[in-house]
Image 1 (cartoon, rainbow, N blue to C red):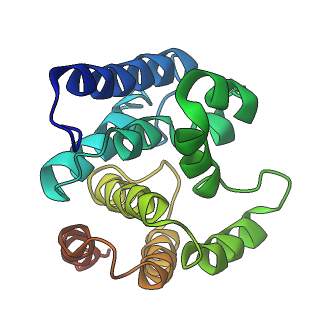
Image 2 (tube, rainbow, N blue to C red):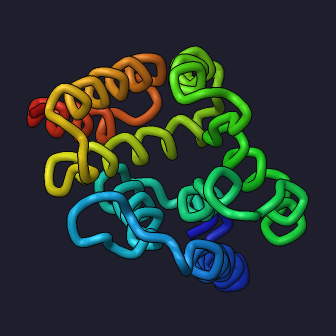
Length: 185
């Protein structure tokens, strides 16, 4: 609930989160995850919001909305202006902070993610933590097709480098990440 605790603010907060979930579902409607079973992609942003709420104690609707929308700029035809118009500057800014630069090659994007992580806002850092938690859980339960163990291990190690740059923002999420990292293939 919002800091004022009023019913109107609570309704607006819930509305923001539900609008973000609906928008993300529409934008990711034809996408599937890379692992076994090709799970519908929307399950992934929903998992991020779930981890933030239930494991990280994050109740801020702006952070939850940004988590739901976190891959729309990177993986769909969504524009920054569209996010700003639909969800406001704050949500769009957080999404932008966690979005990889699409014009760079894979290796450069991964290096940039490490260097940008420590400069991110507290809100973006929490979304990034949830992102890494969910990605590692997916890697353990259903690694992407064709990824040998060495590549999976490299992904775990790179994720730890990113998380090490953002520690201090949410101890519960950091502890959860560390638990999952111990399951490294």
